[in-house]
Image 1 (cartoon, one colour):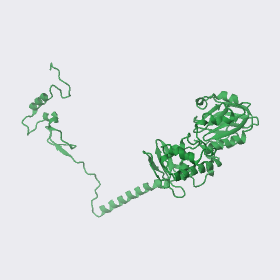
Image 2: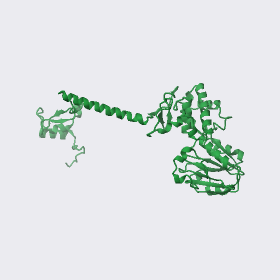
Image 3: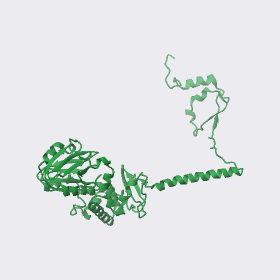
Image 4: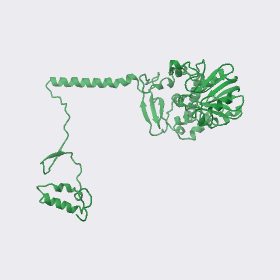
Length: 415
């Protein structure tokens, strides 16, 4: 999902190509997911953009907007796979294009477009979203008040834009007033805007804090360290416009994506071994030796060490070596006249007597039933030690059942 850095990248290109220009044409697909779920009609929105000038573009965490010359204004969220494409420009980050097919790179309008605009200067922009979790809405208010309206007003401060609000004291107050894992607190957009999964893991890696330790169980020194880590990671990622190819070499981001793949990195260059934690279906990448718990952590944490291809092959090689050595040892013993035992021991058996066969085998019973609850079935068989056997035993068994058949049903009175 696009996070604070990717949103900053999109807004950078909007400012570069569209701010200050008049919209000549606009078109939108009637997609109830992208527009309807936030109370906006796509075609109606597009029609209302024509002739308006784009005054500014802004960002708050994972949301961004375009302020128009008059209301309503556009407020957008990329969801999982949304993006802003500009004709003739590579506006996305490097890895975005690596996943596209060659015939899709220069196609216009791009695949999965939801709305597109064209300015009087000939610049064209399109909002795309393959999975349709993105949201495009209109906000009817003065441009300077966009952040005072939903959904921005419900979101916390942006750690890059809102330095007057996002302070160390603000973070300390939020951490001390809650009792949730610190990773969950960082992901809460009502507390801090823009931090998603990879940014949270990166922040905690640099702060050397365990992702599942309760947020109110950290010292003031650790909170200070966390605040500085949030500022460093978010500011650096935004300055690089979300281009991971330019991220520092020592960042966790460069090594965290190999889970389950052949080219997995099990360690960072400085030797930190990586592992994954799973709690409630959410996965965190961290370095156990670096991010040690200093307080209580949430229960039910499942840790999965990250193994490289070489490490995955090592146990197999060791197993094959062990089997080969065992085979050589067996051959050596046989050559010396020693008997090699290869068969498993036969299961232990007990013997009981029946009237047809003197002895049969069965699985041994570990407990004997109480005499009063002894099965009547044994009395149907002759017992040499029991003077009552055969027919007499049968009659006695019938009497003991108090009118019940062997199946357990009551016999009728007529019988």
